[in-house]
Image (cartoon, rainbow, N blue to C red; front, side, top):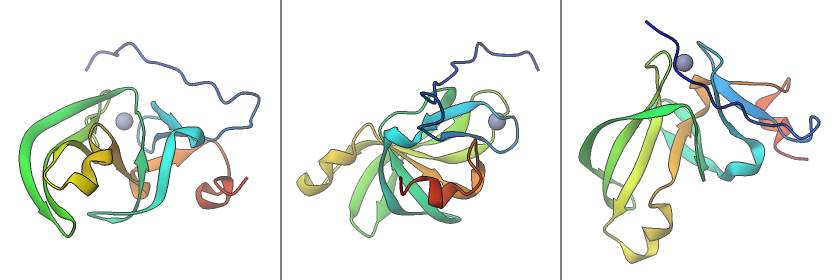
Length: 123
Ligand SMILES: [Zn+2]
């Protein structure tokens, strides 16, 4: 497998935590991109994230969730192909439209530049 071009994120002198792939350490997003840390993924706690780099999309599908029906696609690490969460493409419910274009990223698929992922968010 060849190496993809990698976007490297800036931690602004350690003031931001950089969240990375737990397998290949590709950068995904920083603590300032997190909209909510109170989401639930397939495998536990997840973040709602504004934008994610170094990822690719899986196939598009319709998914029914507790808050309504969405068109989503899986978010995969561009480098190693690991599943890390999904992206909301469209939401049926008006009240859920704010999620469109945002990613739900599962904490268990992430490594962070800080020591404790959860604590780092409380700055
Ligand atoms: Zn990876």
